[in-house]
Length: 229
Ligand code: ATP
Image (cartoon, rainbow, N blue to C red; front, side):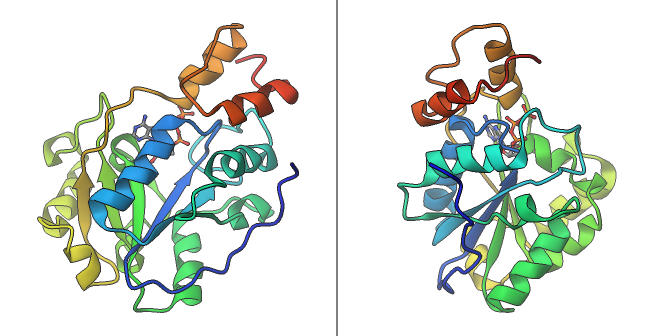
């Protein structure tokens, strides 16, 4: 199944829309449960997955952006509450989250509540992201718990801890009351799965089964991906 150009058109929702960026190298059940449980816990109308093209925050991924996109397509395709935004993959230059959010704001309008979904590890590094403070004028941020990464102000860098304390939503209904600006946290099923772990297993010829969807594993085998670390 070739990765078809994916839609950047998304209907306006009365519920907040989740935006889930990541390298997805490869996509696994930690990602899928995060998106699924965000819909339930945060009352989202859906989640738009945004695979990174050339991520500015880490080294070059092992597989092509198109292959990572293809794996996300294969694992999310049968869920009508999931959609995929391929624009970062298709962009020639590295994409920054703030630019993607500015584009989505133009597309979806000022009223639509947008919720950027991040795991606790990614959130802890937020203050290193390009124009990170502007993110709060464009979207809410919802932080999921992840094993090994506490979600509390005392474990965050000082300037991020200040934002966290000032913007913290005590109730997820705050995500609906304003289009952007709040920080919510949510407890998802704790899955100590990482793409790093999966890449290592595969490079060592070990089984990664039940850590990620079979359809993704089939794709990895077919294209002989992750043969080395
Ligand atoms: P790697 O091991 O290569 O760093 P990863 O498994 O962390 O990859 P990413 O694509 O970097 O996956 O993550 C995308 C987003 O999903 C990030 O916000 C990250 O915090 C979150 N995430 C990934 N795995 C989990 C997990 N097991 N539980 C909760 N959040 C997760």
